[in-house]
Length: 380
Image 1 (spheres, rainbow, N blue to C red):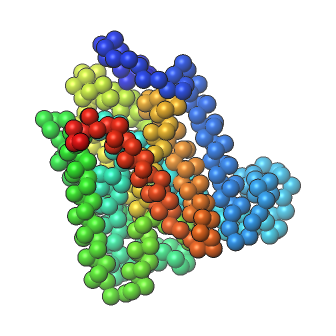
Image 2: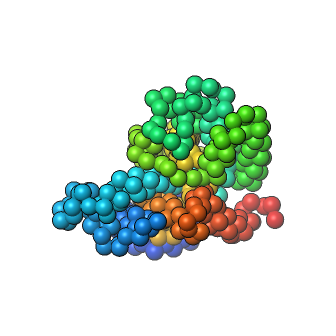
Image 3: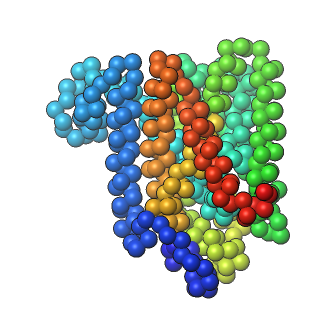
């Protein structure tokens, strides 16, 4: 483990957990993992853009993407292949990348903040709070309801209210779970999970009530599809709605990577080393909620991205948030782009919601983590 997250006494009293790049410093780990994840993201984008009703060779897709990025590959911009890749398929893939980056970064930040491996925006109810905020805004505000059309046309000018509603719901849910999980000033893991389960149930019930009271059947069906996590029909207009909130929140969270490292050795030790624990808790929680809310407002509730990606990356680069947070951004983007491509091909020509794919992968992964941490949780 990095020296940034262990005190000398801790280092002497317990063995260092092994990870793949344990012998390297922060900068080499950052360069290696980010370079590898950028390559993985490009490969995922190539695979996603090549799949669809019209199959396109991977080499042609890669050339079209590089040409679109500014590298001269000799591709004719008026060709059918170039137009299909850049105008039809790339916008949705970029939305998937942005949403995946936001969810993975939020998950890594929450796991560091709560100091437990099971914290995730979906597990502890933050995604459910954001979903309730959006559904409440859509079904109860007539002017907004007419503007928010998930499957049709450009976004209306009033759509900034939808991410705001999602953020308010996510923040309230995160604060509620956090307060309920506190025990003598510390976060209790069992209480965190139980509070998250209870809050998910309550917020899900409220969401169901709102949908049942909606008279517009088509709107209800669209929102139900959105709630399970769907990227169908998302394009550049959706990308522009969430790009700045996500980029700004992610950039600010990176500034708190040192504080998150120090929180891993204990709140008292972090306070003694100069961390304002209360302020850091509130700011990081708000930024993670903003990331989650921005993703949910466009893609719906996509579960387990923030749980799977940070855990896999910790096995490679360790728990140092100076490396883990930027790696989670790239890893989450690549993961969700790949999941979206699988969702579009597994039962083709029908489209499977991407939230279903992440749930099928993340559910068993969560149960495995729960089993491995059963002694800490003291439930089984």
